[in-house]
Length: 335
Ligand SMILES: NC(=O)c1ccc[n+]([C@@H]2O[C@H](COP(=O)([O-])OP(=O)(O)OC[C@H]3O[C@@H](n4cnc5c(N)ncnc54)[C@H](OP(=O)(O)O)[C@@H]3O)[C@@H](O)[C@H]2O)c1
Image (cartoon, rainbow, N blue to C red; front, side, top):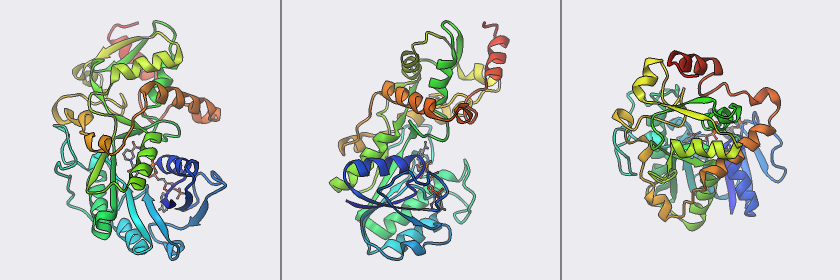
């Protein structure tokens, strides 16, 4: 395939480029040249800014474009217009955050979130999902059946800049045997995620096989993974035997600990988030989505973390600091 990747130098796009090169595809990337410079010798790089300067996209033809960094409907309308007639398919990396509610499990036909400010350029927790839904619409309006909309759940694995999944293997590795580790909810609580390499493989596979006709939720199957299985994989990967101290939502709230940010990857399987980790993925599975074992993702994430310069290895972007966790455990009388 002759492929154009918008982005292509950071996390999802970087793995898509790597997988495409391994498959023998001819790859061009378009980005600002600010991140991951010099990553791939065999890739043609077009420099520009999708929020203002698309001139580098003025010529060229591709079998497909994969848009990994579209957040505003205006910028996606601009890139679809710039490429119309010169790419056969437009794949858009969206998100399961497009859904209006997570109180019950979503499928691809579930209602999408809406915003009162579709023209905003502020992407935050309130606008991210609805704006991505409008971006999807822009792609579908321009490309019709040639649009491929992929809605990943939490994307995890090597090079994840958010540290959400990485928090857990790093936390377990830090523990001595029988040390207490604060764990959210109950071991059987479902979690849902997708290894970034499985997302890359599925995106390319869907393009090669001509999958179309609406969106695809891309994540582990509902019920496939649990928070207990993740923490057990972390213990196995690090050969540690910590003592997981499970705290339910009420106990966490008492100590001001939030799901998802302080206790990453997990949300209470009740109330507003009852369906968050149970998104229907049957459509993507039928189209060829394959999910690798959690242990593999944990092992590879750790290996990547260890490969970073010392200054970049600290986990500061997600989860609890050692001090805060120790204070909570001490307040609960746990040593
Ligand atoms: N992380 C998750 O858990 C998750 C879950 C669901 C969906 N997603 C979706 O996955 C996608 C990829 O996320 P990501 O974290 O890998 O990447 P990202 O931060 O969205 O994008 C980074 C890439 O885009 C380029 N880029 C950024 N701004 C640009 C601009 N104005 N013009 C041109 N290029 C630009 C960057 O290169 P330069 O810096 O060199 O420009 C880099 O290659 C996103 O669409 C996100 O919504 C992520």
